[in-house]
Image (spheres, rainbow, N blue to C red):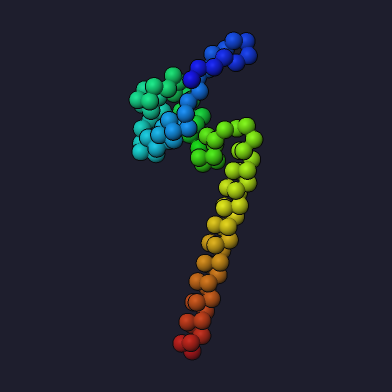
Amino acid sequence: MIFYGKKRKRFQIYSVELMLEAMKMKEDGYTHAQIAEKLGITNKDTVKCWYRQFRKEGQSAFIDKQGRREVYKAKDRYVRKLEMENKILKKFLEILNKEHSCNEEI
């Protein structure tokens, strides 16, 4: 889709599916220029920006920026917090099991 911004500057809007396809191609080893050419993106720097956002925020980077995005960020933060807590608890259990097995040998 083509839209016009302030000062009648023309800019292109791409679908979320296209952006995700570009990120999949990037993870498969394609360069920014190759991705832009294959998917018909006008500028390889656009792919660079998408990739930077994707690494930072995940798929939520491409969701409509009008309001819902903060909810997704909060959920992502919560999920990361839970994942970190799970890792800590697993390490703790691992240490307890090692100590328990050492005490049984004595």
